[in-house]
Each structure stands twice: as structure tokens, then as C-alpha cells.
Amino acid sequence: MGIHQNAVLTPTGREILVRRVVDEGQRPQSVASDMGVSLSTVRKWVSRYRSEGKPGLLDRSSRPHRSPASTPAALAEQIAVLRRRRRTGGEIAATVGVSKATVFRILSRLGMNRLKSLDPVEPVRRYEHDAPGDMIHIDIKKLGRFTKIGHRITGDRTGQANDRSRGCGPGWEFVHVCIDDASRIAFSQIMPDEKKESAVAFLEAALAYYKGLGVTVSRVMTDNGPCYKSFAFREACARHGLRHVRTKPYTPKTNGKAERFIQTALREWAYAQAYQTSNDRADELPRWLHRYNWHRPHGSLKAQTPISRLGLTGDNVLRLHI
Image 1 (tube, rainbow, N blue to C red):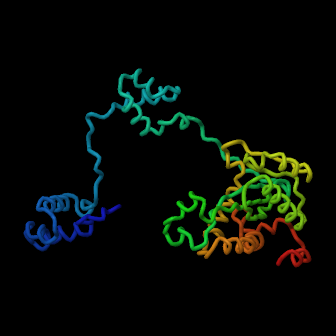
Image 2: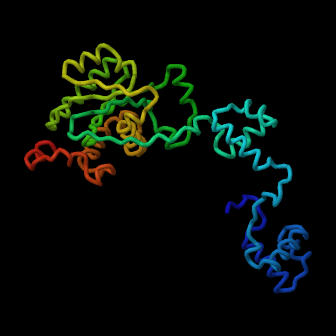
């Protein structure tokens, strides 16, 4: 139960009130004065206690017992039937002879105020490629640069937005991320922008990283950002024999592994501690990535680490683990 911050009586206070009147025999007017409530309030709670006992001291719903002016159930059902036929609120109001406000109030109560709510819920489609390298997901996250501890720690936003809008602030940096679909092994670099040159340079670095782990990449999935639709990125994919797959517009869940990795990185790296500057934050990224790939249990891998899916031998582990 939520108690209003200015509430004089709580259920415990009400019990004290009625005990003073019922058990101790104090005058209701004296109890009202001592507890800072009205005489009618004392009489109300005493009456409820005598008729219902201790449960009568709990809060009750403010909804009236009867609502004579409410919309009849038959009319509400008729509105629901017309809505299932994809009728608009105006059409329904004209058909049943009530105002549009009444129609939309009923539709909101029924959870049918949007036509989209009538569509069947699309089932969650989860997929995972069989082998590491069959598909890598690439995405970009924009982060603000800073020269002092940021507002997420101090709570002080003074001047930050104004400086950036005037072009005299520290600016932005772009975290390019890549995650392997099968193993969840991730790679990330901070680039100065999200243009095609940076996207191609990051792709080259990511492929080199996975190759160092013995993984050959055959597909890459991205969203429809301009850098990924550029001729330069297409040529880079062709040069390495990669099949480039782009997500359907406005469906980020298709690239969900990259989206989820970004959220994890923000929580466990970017906003995990009070960095003095964004350069300090950038210095921490390689260390966090190492922990993510080699030491952090992954929920979708049954608490195993991403690197465990490569099946490395003892010699390879000693060579690659730093």
C-alpha cells in the first residue's frame, strides 16, 4: 500500500487511535486533538473497527459501489466488436450513437485504443549460427567525450549541452562494436566518427582480431547506416569474401546480439565507474573486453565464457591469453 507523504494516519496509527477509544475509554474529542485529526475521522475508524475488526482499518478502494451513469456492458461489447472489424473511433461513435470520447475511453479500458493492438503478437524468433565466424554483427554507439567526471556520477548537467550545441565542447566519440553470433566473442574500438572510412577500418581490425583466434568470418550483419551502405564498405566485404547482410529497417531486434552487447558495455564499462576523462574510459575498454571474452560468464551460453566456444587447446590458450 502506498502511503501519502503527508498522511496523518497509517493503519498502525489508526489502531492506536481506536485502542485509545475502545480499550482505554478516552473521549473521542480528546483523541482527535492529541492525534491531529478531526472528530469525524475518529468516529469513522472506531465505527469500522467495531464492525469489521482490525481489517477495517486498512485502506479501501475509492471506486464507488455503483456507477449508474457508466456505459452499459452491452454497448461496450458492441464497441469492442466493431473495433475488431478495424473500424475507426469516429465510425464506431457514429454507429452506436455515443461521443468519440466515450468510445476511446472504453477502447483504452479494453486495451484496444490502437489498431496495432489487434494484431497477433509476433513470436520471438531466436537464432544462432552453428560455427564461430558464420556471422558477425556490427553496430555503432555514440558517446559524449568529457574532460571531467560526467553528470551520470555528479548529477550536474550545467553547461554540458550548451557547450556541445555551440561546438566548443569536447565533442563525441563513436564506439564500433562487433560480436560473433555463435560464440559471442566481441571486439570493439573507439573511432572518431561513423563515416565509411572508420567503418571499413573497424571491419579490417575486427577480421584481423578473429583471424588471430583462428576464426574465419564469412558473413557480416549491419544496420542500414550510410557508412554500411557505402561503396567502400561493400568493396571491403567483397575483398574479404564476406556476404554482407543488412537488417530490415526499424527492426533492431534482428541485430539483437550487437544491441544487447552495447547495453552490456554501457553498464559494465562506459558507465561502470567514475572516469576522470573520456580518455581514461577509452583506456579501460581493452581490459573490459578481455574480461568479457575470457572470464565473464555469459547468460546465453549457460554461464560459460565466450572464448570457451572456440574449443582452444592448452597451447592456444597460453598463446592467446594475455
